[in-house]
Image (cartoon, rainbow, N blue to C red; front, side, top):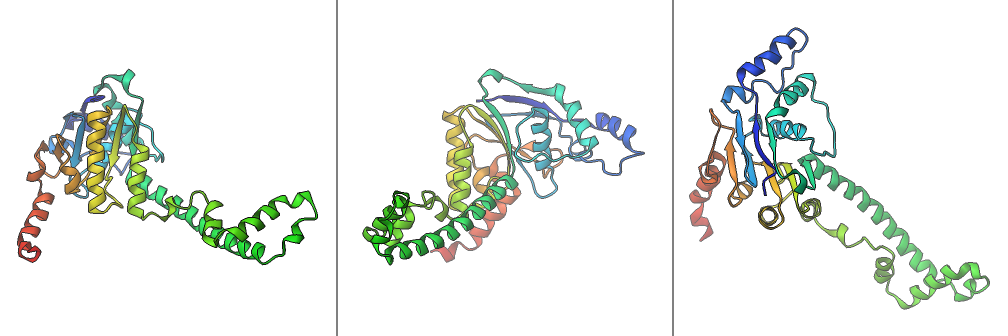
Length: 290
């Protein structure tokens, strides 16, 4: 499914209009002179569109511009300055959205959002570990206390129940039955990050994603690749992704804009310099795999 069909970045003349009126009061002209100098102006999207490039190529910038233009929801709101805001406003009339009534949501997800999620879980995990210690101590305290102590009052019903459980359960089962979210927190960072994407991506939605490969092993990147392909094909999702992961660049039927060349143009994933580096490296070491 395609919800965002076309988008037009500013050309050199339009950028000059912004710079001319702001040059006396602004030293930072971001995001000017990133795309116009590469003759990158008109963008046409597919169900999966990828912006590829190295550091400083502008792939994250273009995601931010697009997400601001379509008012995509964000976890973290950061102000990028007056010039950036004016750039976005000048782009809005040239942003073509279709099938709006079918699109349930439009989301921008950055790699920082995944890191924040992992940090939140790590904090929860620390609390869980402390809770585990408390429950182990509680288990042995109940187990070693005579049952008669809890017979004197109805107010001690919970204590008596815990005493009975401590007598009939192992310490591990006692802890697990009182710690319902224990299992998910045993996953690795990579597995948890993959779970983030599986929980975050829903049907009938547009996703703008910055470097989703972060925190994922090669194996999990391939799982994410399959998940994105299926979400686009079967569940009416559109993806606009910035990445240099060879696994995600190989997404089936993805349209790839190479921001490392001037002028910017679309290329096959096998033509990209980053992918060629991987290919040459493994060719050089092919005999070591035999």
